[in-house]
Amino acid sequence: MLRGLNMDRQLLVSSLIDYAGRNHSSTDVIATDSSGIVHRTNWSEICSRARQVSAALRDEGISQGDRIATIAWNDHRHLEVYYGITGLGSVLHTVNPRLRDQQIAWIIRHAEDQLVFVDPDFLELAEAIALETPSVRKWVVLTDELQETSLPNAVAYEQWINESASTFDWPLLDEWSAATLCYTSGTTGDPKGVMQSHRSIVLQTWATCTGDGHNVNSSESILLAVPMFHVNGWAIPFAAAMSGAKLVLPGPDLSAKALVRQIQDEQITFSAGVPTIWLSVVQQLKDTGSDIPSLQRIAVGGSAAPRSLMDTLEDDYGVFVSHVWGMTEMTQGSAGRFTHRVAGLNREEQRRRQAMAGRELYGVELRLVDANGEDVPRDGSSPGELLARGPWVAGAYFDLADDMTHIEDDSGNWLRTGDVATMDTEGYITIVDRAKDVIKSGGEWISSIELENAAVGAPGVAEAAAVGLPHDRWGERPLLLVVLEPDVELERDEIVEAIKPHVASWWLPDAIVAIEEIPHTGTGKIDKKVLRDRFSEFDWPE
Ligand code: AMP
Image (cartoon, rainbow, N blue to C red; front, top):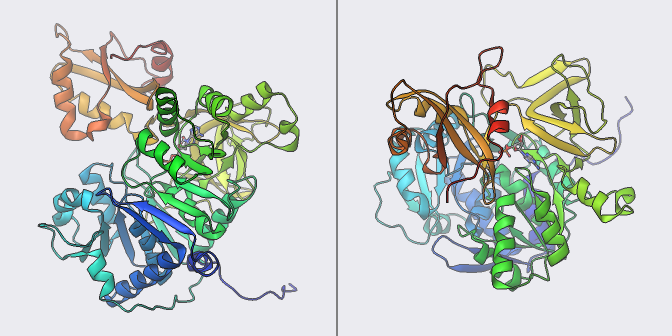
């Protein structure tokens, strides 16, 4: 091989924050913390405080490869910690606080997190799991001053970083070192950890910034309406630094009223979030007769966005909608920017494509296969299981012995996404169904299997099936179908009481219906498709 003669510079997350700190030092980063206080800071301060975080972690004896968890909202301290953890070479493990306490404890134990940064909002949760997470040596509460807490070894973040050196030189890591860890919600079996390298984060951030990605640049004002604990906030905390954009972090209040106010006050040009967020924003705009003229475009994804959302945002508010598809295993896999050809088509044809889940984005190769692993044509109508590969697609899960989620064939290693999709000649994908029948509520996952298992524990319930049905506000909500034992009357409250101890409160089914029989497939599994079709016209109770 004749080697190219480029410099040997590794692709590191620290280079992103350094770039922003150096070239966009006074560009605003505006954050609302969980007590409602608005902090106006900038990339220079975020960069220097991130270095302090690294120094403080080093002083705690944290080394490269150690996992450090965050249980936090979108604010400036979480952003500093993002860069402080990764800059040192330790691994940023973002934990989803919406999971059940036991799941969170399981994930922290599995990751063997050494230290946890926790928002004061989640102190009670931390107190509840502290005894079950023996690897955690310290809890750093993201606040100025510590409130009364039973947490062992708890410190206030501001005091903790102020005790460390004010300067810190980022180590020159190998770009293949682990940078972030994020667990999928695990609908079957235990959650699975997706570990991204520095190289992967930098490459996916680049793709996100490209014209066919989110097209972000230094003139933007970005509102991050995706939680930073969900797939690293879709890489936007990294993309904002890479592009030197103004970044607005809304804290815990993701209500439409708060988002609209911030779009107006901060002259937001680009934002991203799940369909539920944008449906509520549109409703708020309609109810109040207000407008958001600065907002040029949004990315929407995480679950299927309805066509009506795009129509309203574009026709009534002039906001271009890019429908993206992705998953924890790769962050963004597609984006919905128009090709030159689609840009020349009429509006109806354009909208038809926008309702699809975007086009293959360079860097994530997509492929459809049938049950025998044979390629399915890209004809826009033949469904197949969606496979993906690329430099930022997970090649394996963290510390998981029995990995059934990848397939190896003559062309190499592919991730099985679990989604069934069609793809057209231009690379537009349409998600037909999820292979695992997971219920997506407001961009978060509800396990139908866990709901069913809990429901069959209720007195008088012989069998249960949970299916996700379309819901105007949440995208989908669970409908629970039960077969009752002979001569038993349906007692909805009793069933709900029996399920409650086993699942998060927002997982509880919105409706419960008794049916004669639950249909099964040839292999004895509940046939969810038949049930979804049968209840497709179901009206949710008020
Ligand atoms: P998560 O890892 O939690 O982000 O979930 C990833 C899953 O969300 C994918 O495998 C899809 O099932 C679903 N998903 C993401 N984006 C879309 C979309 N635009 N349309 C339909 N489903 C989507």
